[in-house]
Length: 291
Image (cartoon, rainbow, N blue to C red; front, side, top):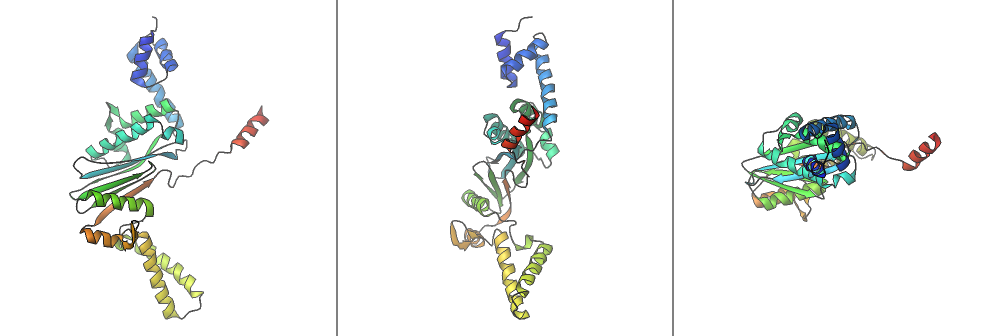
């Protein structure tokens, strides 16, 4: 049967694929719209599998607070290039994951991938997007906090996101604390969250450095104690000077508000991923030599 422009248009709207790909799919199925969609989905899954080993170190972070202010979610979704990270389809996909996280008790990657999104699973939507955009796309990590207290969040340029849980609801304080965390990168909330092993390791390093000064043991002990205090102040949220008023620590800020931080998560795109370094000059020369 003849493939009309209207049929191609309908298939494009239903799949988001290109015009020529849609026309080819309809020709192969003799105009059977549903079979064409099924075949295109299968093809998309195959393409997604082939791209699964490609490094995805670009992307965006999404954050969202629930309408009742009792839940907050953050997700880090990666792709291969900044160009795709800025595309509306990719941004929409990231934003669509946040309501799923807020409305469900999802704790694992498998649960999120199997969750329902637009009538199919999250993983099917992800794989379809890989087929459409031509890059590997991964949901790298996520966190969801649900509390009887309060939550806050902050997003910096779509690449750094922070969520915070407070003992008492205070949206303005939650945002300020999240903004501080985005800028100052604390590791834990307070001293008691730092493992004894980490403290001991730092202590031994400081002792080794101090011994070289030739000072008496009692002086060295005081020096090391001071260095440990400084180290803990740098890595703990409550020990850091507040970015909006460096004369006040976060601990003092929270005390003045009669509040405290239960936990926080800070996600930054590409953090900890070894990016592939492209040398286009060498690549072109290699192609010239091989031709």
